[in-house]
Length: 328
Image (cartoon, rainbow, N blue to C red; front, side, top):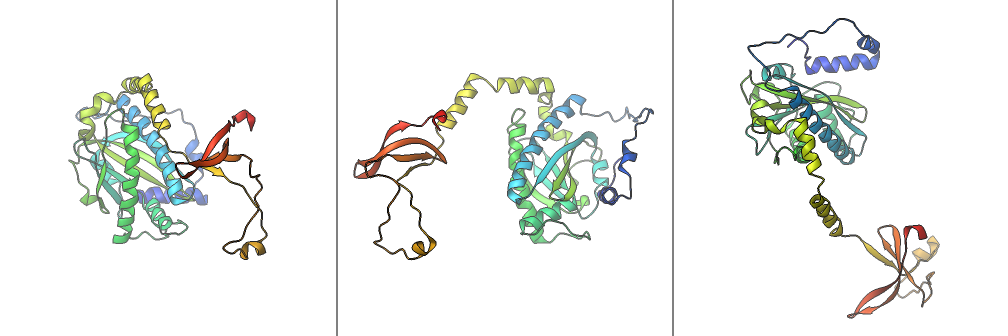
């Protein structure tokens, strides 16, 4: 496959673009020449355009979920976007991988077989460094991964897999789990080299570090649900999902959610010197009257006023006023 670069070639190209050795405008020049792609009738693609479009929608949702997760987990700005999805042979994917690699072999249960999540070295090193408390700038020279680094990657990749269930829920109830990580493409031969795959490519940016992530999905894995990988069926299932029953289920979940309720007895201001001299038995005057009302806070919002009291030998409050939003 002549139009697919190896990971080292991609990293070199990104470096040359960032340093100005290559003018980005050269890649944006419009051409009137028609691009012709050879079609091998002996090896027809098993993925229709509609299948690929649906899978792109699924993984755009997934990209948004892991963007939010990684931003909070790594405490830095993370952006993950789907940049392409194409159908090709498995051998074309593996031939483009440079060692050392991070190839997560994932059991795509309940679907048969496994998929591969490929992380570029730049992204892998950045993840490891940030998890260990570093700045995540990566390393200058590519090297192999230690057992500890592999263990760290396995943990965060396993957490990322949990977010794959929601985007796929209209197709199949996934239970993906990480089997192992391979650092050499030769040991990741999970299928026949001529087997067709859908390759989803993500552009990831962690802080100032950029790199690619590839999700390799074999046709034989998604073959049982191919009929559901249609944009027409996809959107019809989404519409069905917004039924009255769904709304009631959401309302019930919200009603069952626990919220913190705090009755504020009063407040006082002290100087630091007074605070440091506080002893057991000292009395402080609060800003509320003995017969006054207490503020009742729901989270950080003042929602009620109440009177203090006792019920069943426990401290209690009696709501005297409901504070509406328009009341401030």
